[in-house]
Image (cartoon, rainbow, N blue to C red; front, side, top):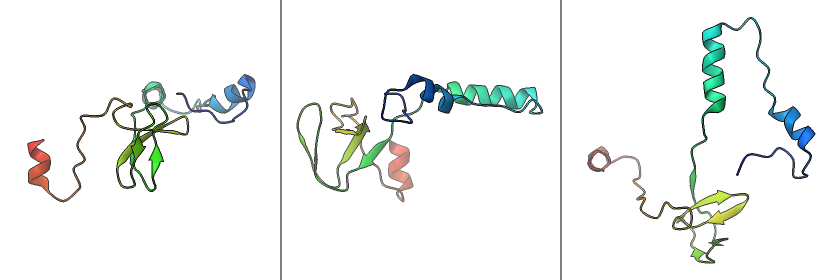
Length: 100
């Protein structure tokens, strides 16, 4: 779901806040890098759950300390978010990290 700046569906206000202005003094190369960065698709972020929750799609319980993905302010279990095969590797064990 795309990022929304306001909860009310006001397309003209959304357009104003989504507009990116670039200085004409900015070199062409930096303008191009900035354009590429703005067009890049955002990567999904998975969170460690701080309290018990329920998946908004399948209704499964998401226990505290397990992982979830938030989409449109609704929690999704990893299975519904299509990340069911992921394994969390905590920092600190470089040998284990390299094996995966």
